[in-house]
Amino acid sequence: MADILHRKLSFDVIGCTQRVHSALEPGFPESVYQKAMGHELAKARVPFETEKCLQVWYEKCLCGDFRVDLLVDGKIVLDLKALDRLTDEHLAQALSYLKASGLQLAILMNFGCASLSLIHISEP
Image (cartoon, rainbow, N blue to C red; front, side):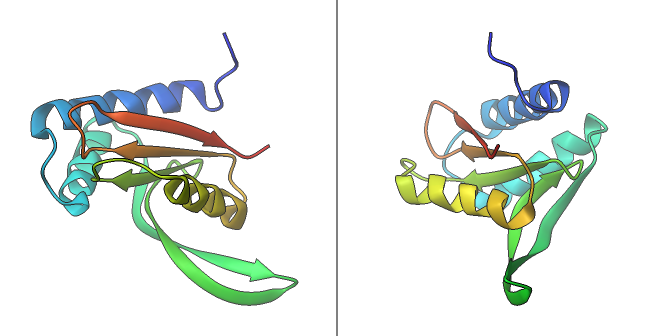
């Protein structure tokens, strides 16, 4: 089995995600799932920040900032979607979050389908 970055934390997050998807099912806007994920993470005593602002630097120049949906324990970026399907653009966006933040793991999750989609994206 491949080594999973932040194994326990990842499993805790996935458990929370599955509970939210099972209870709410598809059909709500992303903001509803984000709030529900915050509730589940808090119940599980998993530290997180909502709408965490991160900065984008290029050659010592601050070029802008962006907000990630959830930052778990300062280690994992959660990028939540509520769409019919994920595209390469969504994957690229999550990878950009990792590059800009200096973190190594993002989980792209889509609550918009009957079957929950979870994609682990890692930056070496």
